[in-house]
Length: 247
Ligand SMILES: C[S@@+](CC[C@H](N)C(=O)[O-])C[C@H]1O[C@@H](n2cnc3c(N)ncnc32)[C@H](O)[C@@H]1O
Image 1 (cartoon, rainbow, N blue to C red):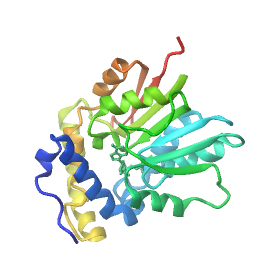
Image 2 (tube, helix red, strand yellow):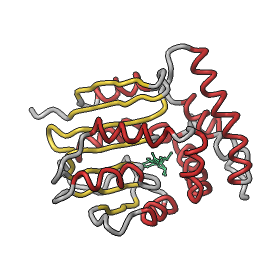
Image 3 (cartoon, protein in one colour):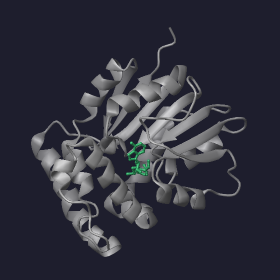
């Protein structure tokens, strides 16, 4: 397997290098991404994504953007809920992940399209979506403020944004234990599934570099959203919810 770019720890502090790492990771793991998720989360990632869909409450006729869609789980779960008349656009900069999303699309689901783009430069008109979702991707964003500005721009007034990601537990011992599990299980899985122990080391290190759900809540308020924060599963997961005000 091709070696990873060097110096992840410092790369996570430098925006351009972080994007290079993110691309390396997701291109290498794309074909076994879903299996890796199932094993590392002991199958729970599906439940957390279902809860995201429940919180987002997509309705028939709505236009939905699933940003950083990866292999499309959330986009494909939402698509039937916005039919008839609605559609979902799954956006991701990584072609390999989008190709897998399309392979997973049941032929009966015809209201999903995949667009190769990056969250800080969305190729969509102002006020063109009712709902934007993001799951397990925000830690990899080079510039959250730019992404939030774009999400706010493409949402209609009254539109919703829901972000699901690993939380930063306030208790330090729990934060460390949690990341310790991700480092240990990630090294084993990286070797077994992808032939390189560093494949998943990006996850715990990016969790450590991520300032967390409360920080994101404040960034969202600064970007113009009305916000709500749901921390769940012993503060392992967090849902950041934002509404673009109508006024
Ligand atoms: C861990 S995967 C999550 C995929 C999917 N949302 C899920 O929950 O399974 C992270 C995804 O974020 C994408 N990504 C990374 N940086 C991005 C950015 N700046 N804008 C949009 N997507 C990005 C990656 O290519 C990758 O597919």
